[in-house]
Length: 273
Image (cartoon, rainbow, N blue to C red):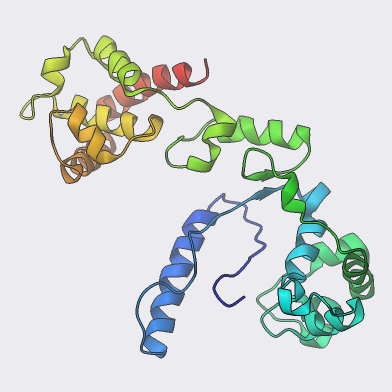
């Protein structure tokens, strides 16, 4: 595509976001250097869907492979003409799926081909999709980011519930409720035995203020500037420093780490209610 791309990725470490961030930074930097340009290379932000391989992997693969002919200019073409264009499109992995001599070493073709039996089987599968003008499988996405049956969604919900709402913003609707800042601050004050006024004192309670900043960032749908207002009219940079110093102290001091986990458990319990 001219201004975006699609990747179908399988990862065992749940590190797709990390990979995409690294890939986009490195490739955009190289491309800008190579062609003496600057700025963003792709349109919009990275977006990912979690796919139930047993039910939807083949459908998604076919849909992505046909993106090259799903444009207005080709709307009047016969499906055979569209197939010839898609089959030879140079910026797609489809040629390697239907012709072994076009296979690329960076792509693992085995999983999808094993589902249809052979390259001929995959060719037939894709052409059938063109002939029937299949709808996008992404219309069946649940909670904005999961494509799968009910059992798969339930399993994903249990797994994703272990993580942070803020760090994985697309999961908020699926996993748990976003909390009001007042609730988080109230839990923190009760667990630490402090007043609202003392939470705003900059030269004391550094660890507690760091815990407050981190929990407000993770579990409330507010910005770091808004968190700064709650913690005594500090700017977003100071909030970032509070969070960073907390992580450093947690790495060095087990007692601080345990205190944070104890309070976070109370907050997560409130999320699930």
